Image (tube, rainbow, N blue to C red):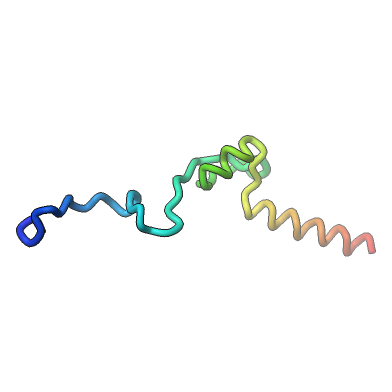
Length: 73
């Protein structure tokens, strides 16, 4: 590659491509419900902190709330 383009800087890795859309830094956060560690965008990790609930738990919570409402009706 250097022979074809002397200004070529070399491969910098997929994680550092600024031109890729959706390439946001991730941070590891533990779900407050199930205790599993999840990689979430840094903004969400800072915003929710210790009260973070992963998407799986939030979906299960919504399903179980609907089931409780159906049983009560």
